[in-house]
Amino acid sequence: MIERFANYEEHRLLGVGLMIAAVIMFAGIDTTTKYLLGFFPFYLVLWLRFAGQLTSHCGIAFVLGERSFWKTNCLGLQLLRSTLLFLATMMNFWALSYLPLSITVSILFTYPLIVAAFAPLVLNERLPASRWLYLVLAFGGVLIIMRPGTIAFTWPMLISFACTFVVAAYAITTRLVARRDRSITSAFYSGLVGTAIPVWLFGAGEWQLPDTVLPWVMLFAVGAIFASLGHGLFGAAHRHAPAPVLAPYIYTQIIWVSVASYLVFGDLPDGWTITGCLIIIAANLRYLHIEWQTVRKSANNNANFKIAS
Image (cartoon, rainbow, N blue to C red):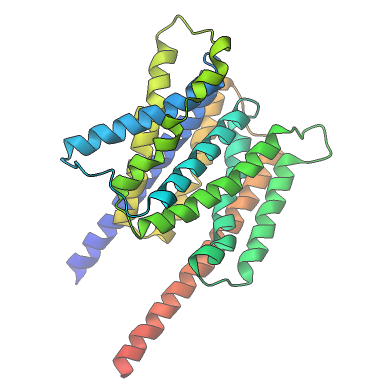
């Protein structure tokens, strides 16, 4: 029994380590993208982010001997999910071209509660009244960050805020496809729509390509390395530890983003952004704690019922 418990704890620690590594990769995507937008047109960065991810996933599938990784049991749903990811990424990249990293990431932290609030409409899950309270609290944190009606408010904040709803829809469709397709299949379709749409053509007349090598290397790294590795680590983390254990470590992204933003751009989040971000994180973690307690109580009741019967 002691040995089994130790192994379980080791798996949890491994899952936490993988989650932190995944979040660092996600911070790398945003930081590198914001840097690249100073060298490349928006459309080219967006397209190569998906093309690099798709190429990388296909290469990994062939190395693993998966020749039928593209076969899906829910093509329409996979294409919808891929389209949502494309739209969310486009909106996030657009916001990043105007806003500091800390603001876009902080606003995006509201999406788990949006998923919690609206997932029951699609997934037929339980809908406790408390989830609306924490969603309102999180939106209060967003208002603190955005400060509408003041000179601090800018219209790109609305893009970042709208992006959270698209990300939430993407997360819900991800749950749906996970019931019918393998992870490697979903990974392939994640980058399909973004690669198939030649968005780079829209800004072809505006290209002023850099002469130095570093921006080109980073442009390749956004999709082929950061996106592919980040999503791979994210999936691996959930195979070693339950979601409630991993979820708090998602919010360490604000730390890595703040450090990267300061080192690369010389930006630091102001007091309003930090306050709003802490409120959003607190609302998410409190809701997660309540859900985790509910699940454990339900599991204990079922176990006691089986023993009694």
